[in-house]
Length: 287
Ligand code: PDD
Image 1: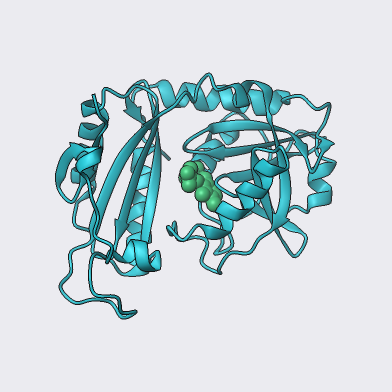
Image 2 (image 1 turned 120 degrees about the vertical axis):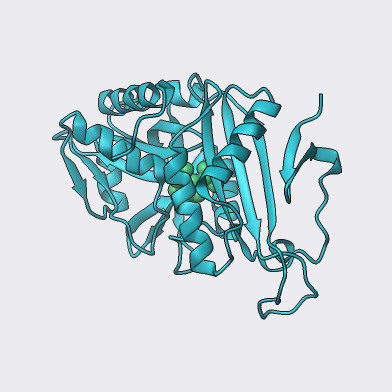
């Protein structure tokens, strides 16, 4: 059975879903996206993802064609039609199809695409064993708070990581870690406190980050919301990343230096368990 995708109001086999070459997403990366984790057939943190989607659309001035309830219904139908139990739901909106010209086209409907990717998140080897990261310069634009489909800097950063035998790149600006190529970056101090960069235009407001901070607070873990340097990360007791497609993943080395004892740390493992528990429970109101 072929994968069923969503394109502009219709559910159809992925081979039949075609987008014209004049789509502004293709020509200008003039669009935004979202990605939602799926566990036990349910969308994880979906309300918060849809809230960020609405914000991204407002920021780049694309009218939102659907209410939050309508989005949810479409997402759930896509998951259902693909018989999906665990993985990732991708959603993209571009400014639509028009003759190539930088100015916004008039009276053009946005292009809306959704597809699913089946993958193991709860029992992924990376989550059990931890991953290696390298640091690279952050070469992105200044509105990283918008979930733009313009991801060339991240593609290059993550490819550099792969070629260095690592699984993620931590991007660095003025000596401070901003975030991962496709994840939020955390360290744990020797005192057991979590350190994470505060929200600003310099990073994407990660939804998994937001939930994780709520869970760690409930668990009594002390949070230091501040920037941290690469040197502080090398010397940290633990490090980890969060994202909708991986939840919480331990980092066991940075630039070839072992973090802590080089194994997934206890606080990271505890947070991963708390997150998995939250994600497997029936929807609970966030904050
Ligand atoms: N990436 N920072 C960046 C730059 C990201 O691309 C992502 C997510 C995150 C984590 O955000 P969230 O917890 O909301 O997934 C942080 C997605 C998974 C991707 O591009 O595939």
